[in-house]
Picture 1: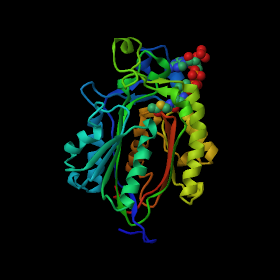
Picture 2 (picture 1 turned 120 degrees about the horizontal axis):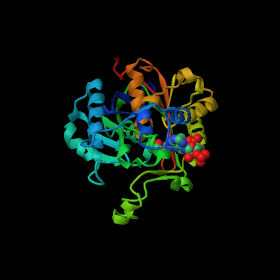
Picture 3 (picture 1 turned 45 degrees about the vertical axis):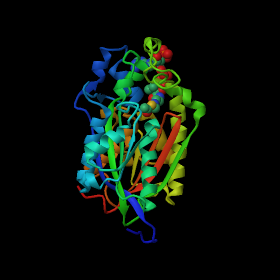
Picture 4 (picture 1 turned 90 degrees about the horizontal axis):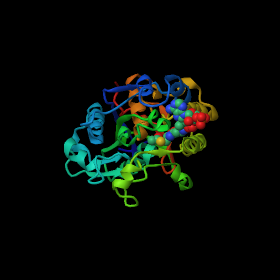
Length: 338
Ligand code: ACO
């Protein structure tokens, strides 16, 4: 399929999302650590988050989100040629979660790999899929972002445990009649890498009694430093992605920012001059679900009729690395109507 300019277009053909049923409220957190519903709401914008049952793994949520995206796109699993899973909580170190899904989705012989850039992972994976489809090498690529952050959250650390939740979101990327991913901008600044990490479990500090005793298998974060980085990174990367798309902020129909903190969302929207009614926000219900925030929000916005074919969506994220990623996504007529 060729666009008007003769190039091959690529965009999102279907969106899906999966959230665990169990809701963990701020009130419940008050009984677990020294915090309050009021502090969490005013400092983060979060009221509740979803937590996976103990028998679940990241692949379970990813599978549910992927099946929904495929069903909505009207594309069977066997037509999927590549699966990319963005996650920092894979089912296990290897094989990749994408490989596990290949079999379960019936995507026979599909290329499958995980991509690990924390919260920015979905947009990184989307950019990779876009290139493969536009080059003509692949037709249908499943881009999935899923994490069970509850498994690496220190439930005794009030400075982090109030922030996170579990979720997965998926997008099927395929050929379209118009250009879809109009512009993207990915980057990192590893000088801040130590501000956000899970110290043990890799080759540097393999699991041992000491790493467990020192609680090194949990996410550690310097919130204030990440906050400062986020406000600048979101503004700069959004501006660059819009510039690369050849658009202005007036052309953006919906801004979908990483749902990490309502104050970061508001500060970035203000800096970019995007009015609140064009910003999609669901942090109050799900908290920060890592790479899943953007596809879950996109799927929800599509279900609610907030976005649809013809719209330009600006998605912007930041996360471990420290990394940033922004993309302007034009939704084409191939995204099936609800
Ligand atoms: N309940 C009550 N008080 C708390 C809590 C809590 N849950 N957590 C911290 N506090 C206290 C602190 O101890 C501190 O008290 P002190 O002044 O007596 O020392 C006070 O609240 C203020 O602490 P700050 O850290 O300055 O609070 P801040 O306003 O910066 O908010 C927060 C903290 C919410 C973590 C914020 O810095 C933030 O959102 N940072 C960005 C985090 C982020 O976006 N991470 C995303 C990357 S990770 C990922 O996406 C997977």
